Length: 246
Length: 246
Image (cartoon, rainbow over all chains, first blue to last red; front, side, top):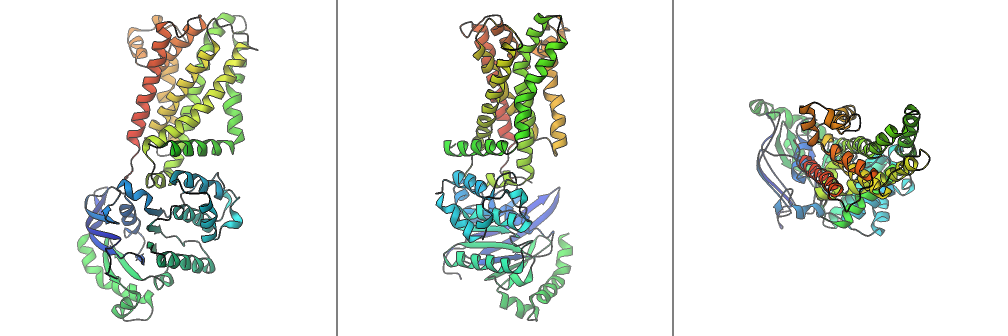
């Protein structure tokens, strides 16, 4: 995986909120063209890390390189797609109207709207108001908006929350198709069955990355074929360290 | 800055407004209705009504655009769409000018309706050009948009945003000379009123009603003062927009 420069390289990243460290001296690397999963208990700093990589988070110190530029550089705003945990689309517009707006902002052709609608399986709901959609449909509308500009790096914060297994499966197929076409995906999740579909896994706890492995490597390290069990084992083993950070 | 993005944002804001017919009815219907009631309140003193009505033609856009803008922008902040826009190739000026263009257009329609009703059915005679009344109203509306954007940065909820209105807008109404001539106010209030943009707008409106036009330096001066304050408030609003948030 080291044949090309990493899509994301983070070094000594510290983020504080209200004086308390949310991310403490964090380091990680995301290989280009892969699907990397970011996992960890809720409140461990996953969203903060993703926001820092996208460049919308105030950081205390550290270096974040994204596609060879400093995170948040203006030139990256076209090259990085970001989907927040809460769907960030306009509830009082239809799915298509939302996509038309973001397509205009990005300056991409309108034909692209039908493509992304198909990618996320929302064609039947294109004319529906976002506010009337189910939670899963709404988050797919949000994902569709992020896909419009064909970003080189897609940062997705819990994109499959509230989706049924069939839909989740088809979205993961989409993620892998995007990665095969050269897109780098960084996906946070807490669903373990999704972890097994990642090329690489980053396990976080209390503001630090405590494991960076392939799913198989993680199974070896955790001593169990079940990723759930491996996560618990590794998190428990890291506990003393984490208490020092606090 | 990009004309395409400004147009996209203005178009989207107007589109959202179109989805909300009740608000449109309130924006366009309330000022004429209130003026009609006021006409009856001042039934025995039409000359006093004329003075108040001309001032209110300029005041309504300021008030309504302040409320609408502060709440829509607050929604944009809390729904995550602002964070998404800040991660896209959108300049802060694009966002502010997009909003200003959309609501400025709405204000122009509102002011035209209000001025037409005032001069027509309500029988207020003005010696100057009616379009100058509308122009002052539109500039006041831009001031309302700018102050609303600014206020939204300091409100955590829509409830708080509405509470900003008495703080920022009502003092201007009390001191601008509409309720009582400024030369009859206490010296301190007179001095304060000079610093408030609505004072200059009311001065300009009263001069237009008295038959002065853009040719006279006082009307031009009033217009420039209000416009300058609106632009300064827009710049202050831009300063409250942060790409990186804690």
